[in-house]
Image (cartoon, rainbow, N blue to C red; front, side, top):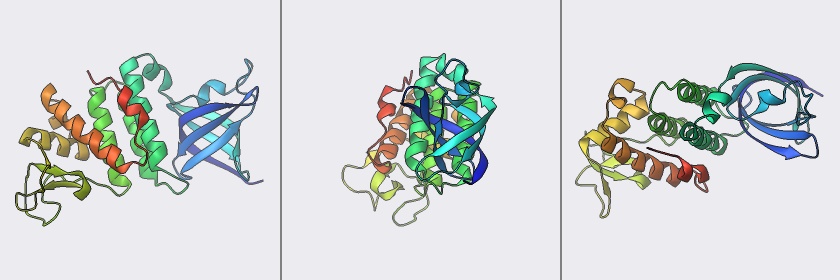
Length: 241
């Protein structure tokens, strides 16, 4: 039975039998992993607390036919406590790990893992407003998955921007000539914030006014739900204010 080791973020867990737990993780080099942690629900378990959502761990597993078996766990970063203690932070992190689970598979790129780790760290350390962290994460995760939005040049004809009409089906903004009826209109400051969130320009994002943030969040939520199959259930529970 092959043995392997990797870094991973715990996405979610659920019970198996009386004492075991199935743990879904996003790893750095092996994509998404589902492993069985045996006996972790017993009080005497050595590593049960390390396999909670939002924890970043180094994990060793035995490869199985269906589920792998978790053999050893070491903590890399314990973000769980800081995240769970605050409801707004918790709902934000929950939306992020749900997104990661839906966007990744067995062959996921290391960039998705690194992006999620960075976003969880920013949440736990309160480096930026939680809503900004979430919106930036969603846009960048979608970009890595192949659905990079365009907030500058026309997504249909390439006419240099910035433009104000946003069409989800076309993946971004369009010029006046290409604008279809019913297209959403975003003001220049919202467009600037969306571009900053996508590129990780926090100097611009952090100073955006609340109405601009709310407008950008609406665009990000709609774009994310459009591209992610079955949508994001946890997004409706995120406390934005």
